[in-house]
Image 1 (tube, rainbow, N blue to C red):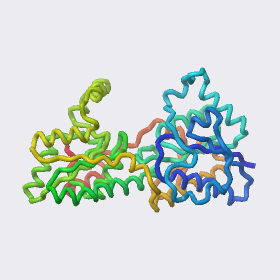
Image 2: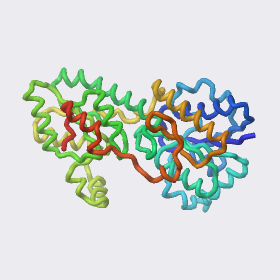
Image 3: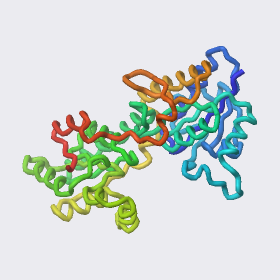
Length: 357
C-alpha cells in the first residue's frame, strides 16, 4: 500500500489538474494499492491538517480543466519558520500531519517559493517529489515549466488583438505581460505576436532607445508600434539603484506599473498617443493548451514512476526534450533568467525587434 499526499501551492496556472491526474493515473494503472490524500489550499492544508481522501474518480474529466481542484494559497518561505498567530510551529505541524497519515511520499506542485519549502521538508526527513509549475518558466533545473506555454498563447492572443486597433488608429500600444522577475513569457509572446519592442527585466532599457526605435518605424512608413513589456521590466537608471533605493522609488511612484511609466515617457518625448493594455490574470486562467496537457501528463507519469521505485527528493524536470529527475537541493533558491546574449535574444534583434538597450 502506497499512501501519497498531494498539494498545489502558490499562484495557480493551467495544467495543475492535468499534472495531478498524471501522477494518480500512473499509480493506479501500476496495479499498486494506493491511497491519495489531497491537502487543500497548498501548504496551509498540510500545516492545519485540512485534507480529503481522493479516488480515481476525482481525477476523471480534469485533464482540460484550469485551476486546481485542491485550491492553492501563498505561504511565503521566509515565514515558514515563524510561528503562526497562535504560536504553532508550521514546520513541525507539517511533519506531524505527514507522519500521522503514515504517508510514503508528498507530491508538491509549485514554483520557486514552493520549491524552497519542499526542499526544507526534504531536509527535515520527509519523502518529497515536486513538479515544476509556473507561467514564468523561471525554475532552475528544467527547460520548461507547465503553464508557461498556455500563458504564452494567451499573452500572444492579446498582442494579436491589439495589432488591428493599433493599426487602425496609428497609436503606440503597450501590452504588459506577466512573468515576475524574468522575461521568458514576454520574450516568447512578444516574438509570437510580432511586437516591435520587447522590454524584459534582464535587459534594462533606455527610454531614448525606445523613442528612437519608434521614430525609425515611423520613417519607414509604419503607422503604429507595439511594445511587449514585462511586469518586471526596469530602466537603466533604476537598475543602477540599490535594492533599497529602488523599493523606495516604487513605493512613491504615481504609476500603477512600469508600463504606465514607459507610456508616459514616450508620450512626453514624442507627443504620440500611447495606450496600455494589461491582460493580467487571464494569462494564468482558462484551459491548458494541448502542449501543456501532454507535458504535464508526462511529468505526472514520471513522478508516479519515482514513487513506485521509492526515489524521493527530486523535482521532475525537462531537459533536452526528455523528462529527467533533478535533485531538489539543486533547484531550491535558484532563479532561471533570460541571458541577455541568449541566441533567442540575438535572433529577435536580427528580426528588427528592439530591446531598448
